[in-house]
Image 1: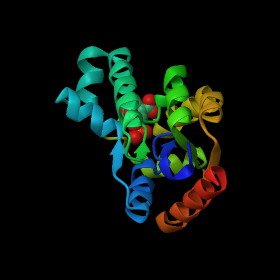
Image 2: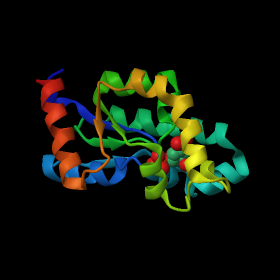
Image 3: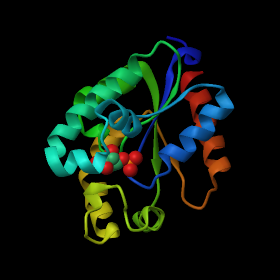
Length: 176
Ligand code: S3P
């Protein structure tokens, strides 16, 4: 499949900027923007916090898997921002890589922690110190992020426009 017809899929930890960078890339590419968290909430008619609280993380992961599959199945090339844990599923990684160019957004844990603030609306951050949770998740998920991504872009010290520049340059390079 040629680059023009593949999705741009953004993955990375909470606070890596997937949603903001994704929106900016979508605007510049003239493509629709899809956020799998928003898709889960729209399809379930409930917030992610509510799903975690009442049904648990496993139930959320199933809804997330359906959302990733749905977004990636769209024939119209889109920019798809995936929730931070979507890469944990081997099936999600296969679908993302099969249908898109997957870009991992990275930043040091202290930068991610500063961006997520108190972690409102992000159940995994709970009541613990966000930097501690993010450090654990970074260690646990590193292999899955690397397995999912075709390329990684460092977002620390760069503004939104510069990160979007880098992502789009990677897209050109990978897709040719
Ligand atoms: C999660 C990240 C969140 C959301 C959910 C779980 C994770 O998305 O999917 O709270 O497992 O890292 P963002 O990365 O968009 O915050």
